[in-house]
Length: 91
Image (tube, rainbow, N blue to C red; front, side, top):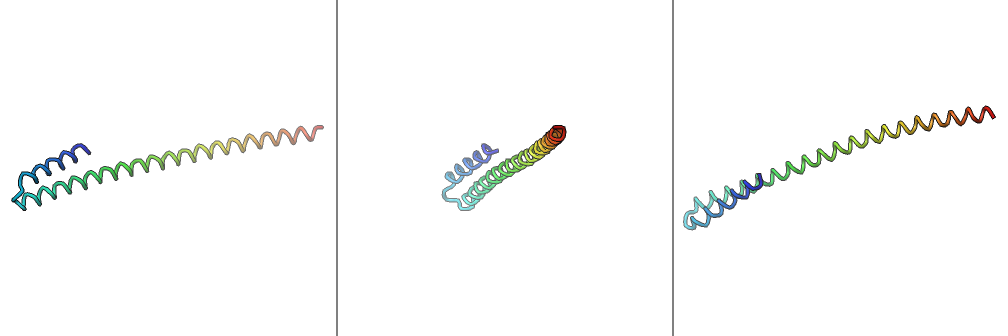
C-alpha cells in the first residue's frame, strides 16, 4: 500500500514538473500528492491501531494466565497448610 502511495506521489510530481505554466494541472497534481500522503498516513495509523489491539489482547491473555497461576498457587498453599495442621495435631 505504501509503494502505491509513493508511486502516486512520484507520478504527481512528474506531472507537476511537466506542466509549469498550467496552474490547473499544477493544482490537480498537488491535490493528488496530498491525497496520496493522507492515504499513506491512514495506512500507517491503521497499522498502529492493529498493533495496539494485538498488544491489548496479549496483555489480557497474560492477565488470565497469571490469575489462573495465582489461583493454583493458592490451592496448593491451602493444601500444604492443611497438611501442616494435621501433622501438628498428631504430634
